[in-house]
Length: 367
Ligand code: ADP
Ligand code: MG
Image (cartoon, rainbow, N blue to C red; front, side, top):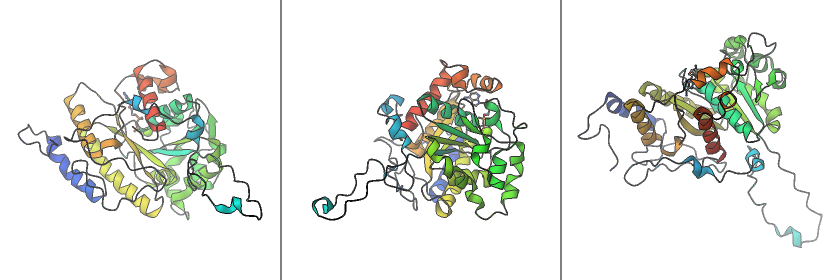
C-alpha cells in the first residue's frame, strides 16, 4: 500500500512529518504528485518527443529502482549527437507526397540535418551539493564515450575552471567577457580533459553589468549558438543562487540535472528551483525540463540518507536517477590534481558512478 504522510502507525520522523507541506507546494507549482499519480496542473507537454516520465508509481506504491544496465540500448554515438532543437527528430520519416509519381521539377535535395549539442545545465541554488563535481565528471564520462564535450563555468568561484587545473585569476578573458561584452565563447575555451569555457572572479560582477542589457537572460544562449555544432554535449555549471547567471544557464539549456544532497533541507530547495523553472518555461524557454534528480553525497550507512532517497522517489518517481553518488574522499582529492575523478582514480567506485550516470543520460531517459 502506498504510504501516506505521516506514516500511519509508524514512528514519525521530523522529516516525514514536515515534508508534506513542501510537497503540497510542489503540487501548486506544477509538479507531478507521485503519491496520487495526478499530473501537474499547467505543466506543458514536451514537444520534442521527450515523453514525460510515468507519474504513477508501481502498484503498491513502491518505486522500483531502475538498474543502470537497463540503459544498455543506448543510441550510437552518431545518434546521440543528433539533437535537433528546431526541427523534426532524425527518426521522423519525411512526409510522403505523391510528387514522385507526378511530372514536374525535381524536388530539392534534402538538406542534411546538422547535429547540435545537447545542452545540460546543472542547477541547485544550494551550495556544496556537488553541482561542479557532477558537471565535470559527467562531462568527462561523456567524452570517454567518444562525445565532443564543452563544459561552461558560470560560477564566479571558478571551481570548475580550477578542477581542470586552470587558475581563474590568470585567464585573460572569461565568461564575463562573453556575457557582458559579447566576446566569442571560443576566446575563453581551454582544452583539457574536455573543453572548458573558463570563469574568473570578474563573473561576480556580471549580473549587475548584464542587468542593463536588452535580452540579458539570453546572453548565454546567444553566445552558444555558433558552437553548438562543434559539440555533442554542452554542460553548464551554475552558481549557488537563482540569479541571472543561473537564469541564463536554464534559458540556454535543453535539460537540467539537479544534484541533491540527501538531506531534508537540501530537498526543500527543489521547490524553489521548480518555481524558477516554471517561470523560465513561461517566459524564456518553453521546452526546458528536468532530465533527472541525482542523489549525491550519499552516506548509505545513515537512516536519514535512506529516508531522504525514499522521499525523493515517492515524490519524483522516475525523475530520480538510479545512480547514486556515494561519499568518498576521492572527490575532494581529484580537483587538487586538476583532474576529474575518472582520470584520478579510473577504476574506483566514484569514477564508475559517473560512468553509470552517463549511461543513464545517454539512454535518453529510458531508465
Ligand atoms: P557545488 O558545486 O554544488 O557547490 P561541489 O561540487 O563543489 O558542490 O562539491 C562540494 C564539496 O563536496 C567539494 O569539496 C567536493 O570535492 C565535495 N564532494 C562532491 N561530491 C562528493 C562526494 N560524492 N563525496 C565526497 N565529497 C564530495
Ligand atoms: Mg560549484
